Structure formats: structure tokens, C-alpha cells
Length: 341
Ligand code: 13P
Image 1 (tube, protein in one colour):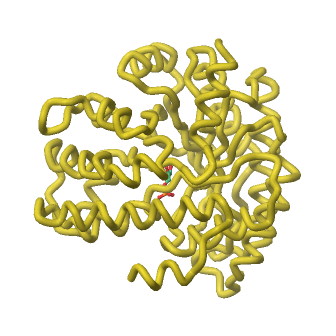
Image 2: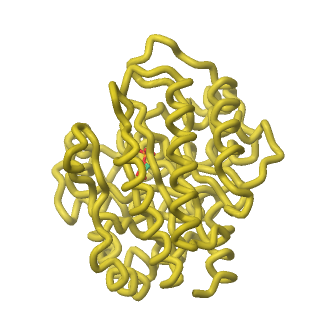
């Protein structure tokens, strides 16, 4: 392990004004997204769509520090034959790879999931590094509901995250450690805060036991928000304040950066929350975005699978990337959204 190099990559992933584009949807997830815009999902249409994102020169050069790829994409070439990994690098961004193998039901834990993919992971990391990946991602999913999460499910997922992170760093790949507390339920913001605190404390305990140097990783947590079906909504300031309270108590300052997932928040909500959190600085770590839906919803809609729409879709991604870039500095204003609309 070369911790100096890992730390350099981690710092670059969370550099001021920049954040991560999560473009690592599994084939079934991207097929669902394409279905919503009337596009058939084939290896070529998926390649064309992602090539369009990675060739959004302005967004990539200025605001996208890294791109998380799916196994299919890291092996694909652009239309002109250039590997997509090279397209990303030439745009000034860092390629990364999702390495977990998705979730399965956890035995004897009804309605709870475990993320799989540890077997053979070292060998896969070596291969991905050869293909150009400098960082990786593993997502654990924790749902909130009656009687869940359980300690067993939470601890097992945290343990897997820590095993993954240790293997990554040992193979000189920066691990994005992603324990996602879902926002699907009807729970209020305080229950989300309580569970997120429990999850993060357990994750850092397991990282400690696996002897993972925190300087070489990036944390990708959820924000503290009410469940989507909760009648009790929270203001932007309340989300920022409660998110920071939990993070400050659970995330050691040795972690270079925190890159939030968007988790089903609207584009503008995800930006406003990130901005409000950064306005409450100075913070012990860099705080940025690692958004999938909140960066891609607008370009997907603008693109709709038509070559004629590529420029409009790239402008849509450019706008969201710029808004989120400003939010990493606490310099976003709602006015900027309206002017662009
Ligand atoms: P969302 O921002 O759409 O939640 O996706 C981020 C991600 O990578 C989830 O694993």
C-alpha cells in the first residue's frame, strides 16, 4: 500500500468546486432509467449515453473530479475507438469502478439486505486497476422500518464495507465507503439522524478493526432527511444542521472527504442541502457530491436517445455540475437556478 498516493487521489476526488459523477448504474437500473425516456437499453445505447456524459468537456474539466463506472462501461470504447476510461482521463477526471455485486436478502433478517462481492475481490481489483480505475465503490443499504434496522444486519454490512476498504487500499485503490440509509419510509428526520449515527459509528468501528488507514478513503453517506412518506418535512437548514451534527460526532477528521449520495432527493434539493452544509463551515473534511440521479436526471430528459439532443443534454449536465460545484464552496444561490431555467 502507498498511503501517500491513496491520499493524493482521495484529496483530488474531493477537491474544492468538484465532485463525483456516479454513472455506475447496473444494467437493470439504467434500463429502467432509459425506459422512462423511451430509449431501448443495449450495450451501444448505454455506451452512447455515457460517452455523451464523459464528453461534456466543460462539466468534466471544471466540476467532475471522478466518475464511477459499471463493469460493462470500464471495458467499452467510445464510438471512435478510444477507451471510455481514456475519454474520462483526457477530460481531466479520475475513473473509478463499482465493485460490489449488489444486494441479497440476509438470512433470518426479514426485509434486510446484505451487499455481496467479497469473494475474489482482490483479483477483480487488480484487473480493474489494470483497466485504469483509481478508486472503487461499495454500497451497503440500510432500510428504516418497523423493527429495522437490526444490529445483526447493520454490523454485517459494516463488516463487509471494512473488508472491502482494506482490500482496496492494499491494492492501491481508494475505497468509497458507502453505507446508505434509505429515505424510502415514513420515518421523521430525527429517526434518520439516530440510525445514520448508529450506522456511521459501526462502520468506523469496523474500519478500525480491519486497520484501514482513514487518510486513503472517501466516505459516501446519506444526508439526514425525513423519509419520503413522512408528513413532517424539514427545512434546508434543519437538514444541514442535523446532518452535520451526526457527521461531526461519527466521522474522524483523518477522513479526507465526504461525498454525499443524492438518494432520491430532487436535483435542486440535493444542491441546496450540500450548499447549506458547506455554508456552515469550516468543516473537518472536504464535503462534496457523488450524485447519480441528481446529476443525470436533467441530461437524460434532454437527451431522450436522440443524437440531435446531445448538445442540450451536455448543457443540462454542465448546469447541474456547476450548481453542485458552487455548493461545495457554499456559494450556490437559488437565483442561479432560475436564471438558467
Ligand atoms: P444517487 O445519487 O442517485 O443516490 O446515486 C448515487 C450512488 O452512487 C448510489 O450508490
